[in-house]
Length: 351
Image 1: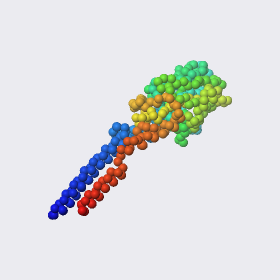
Image 2: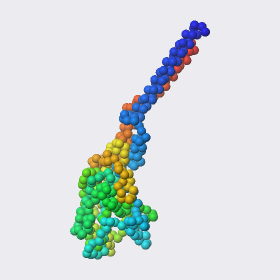
Image 3: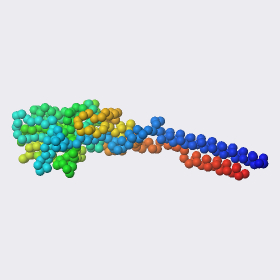
Image 4: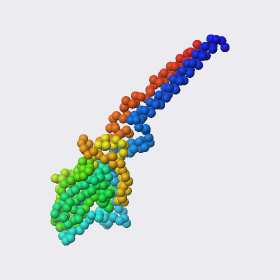
């Protein structure tokens, strides 16, 4: 090999070596930059974080997941009876009482239903130490659960039978309701058939009172309860309900006070969506992280903001994917530099 050839070979080896070193540096920078951008908040991206974020989106950002307590079936402890013609179905309520002395066949129900931001019934695990109170008239002084009616949340911690009625929804296989218990009620019997049942406005007090909104009241004063109504959309102000009088030839009336949780998407920064559904046996549900409790301001939020939810980084949905950290990812510039250096090496080698 001539001296000229040896010099050419030396230059080629040097340039190719430089290219290899630079390519390694750029590849390392790419990997480091990509990792930094994915974990832009400084926390490692884990499977658990991804799971939690997915949970928020799948529950539309509600602060408490829906209660899933199926209605009792024939043979169950709390199953009572059904009409032979299939027009109604009844479940046993431990808060069902008869007046003594018995004054007539007038009877009725007063209930409280708590729903989440999506309008689904819940038991109030996200608002512990909170109480809903509804005053009643003199005609219910004899009832041990009335005067006033007091409902303490969470229901599963305070009552052996947390939910007892299926007041809302429809199911083609049932004469009434959708097949899931949704209300906490008292029942009364033995009232005069021409009497009136009165109740006052619901008052919410306690640790999370500001997290609960009184939506309104659903009242029906006749023999049967039509469950094909929406607890939120069909609730009316107290002034439009406010006590019932038995209709002619009717001896049964019912009213439900509807409460709703209020939430803000910012409350779900840790990616958790609230408690697990209840299992229907009245036992305490699995422990949940109460750090997701709402802040109770309820302002500028009609429940739809929760569906916008927090994104995978717990932001407000508009910042996490476009942060400055994303600029740290190398683009085509690194590939162009490597290609250019490779071209120089080839050119030198051919001289």
